[in-house]
Image (cartoon, rainbow, N blue to C red; front, side, top):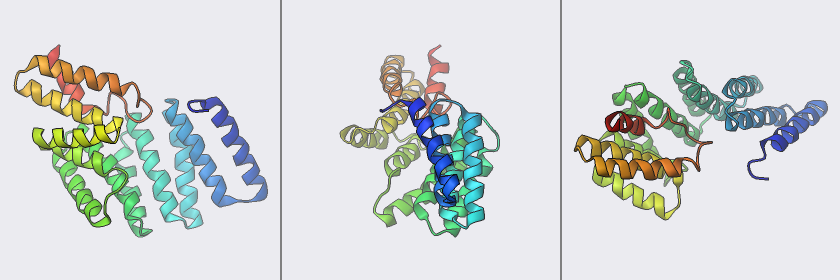
Length: 234
């Protein structure tokens, strides 16, 4: 059942026990990572990080660098949401593991997470470099899971209102709520720069309403533009 994390935890733990009994190391690592993902969805970031770090490190030991990169990137996300300063280092390691394993898609995902983090940390220059590298990769690969979010974040960093509106239109057409939140937040921030409080409040209110549907994907710390807007509107 969607949202039933208690049953999900019970089933994942049972799977881990079974996989351990039969000696399926590869499957066990994924079960551990699943438990970490459930913990993250429940906001238990310390538990999530512990499970995901085990999964990533054991994947390296087993020689599965692509799998390690996947779990390492998730670990970085758990650390980021817990405000753990190790998150950036974790993302960089995930990128390196993905590239070593020949998985450009995973490397792009980790770069995107790192770009979001560095923007929040005040390093817009590195964020732009990471997002532009991703944009080139997505173009060569014919797209990807996070290409739309990548385009939106790059437009936000560049304060490009026209591009933000263009990406927002696409996000609405494909019903990508997470991307819509980021873009509406960015447009609200630009409205504050123009001293247009009415538009800023309207855009922020719409973003805030949508954000309630994707709380498992982002939290207030992720919403850099929203936080800037809030400071202005107070």
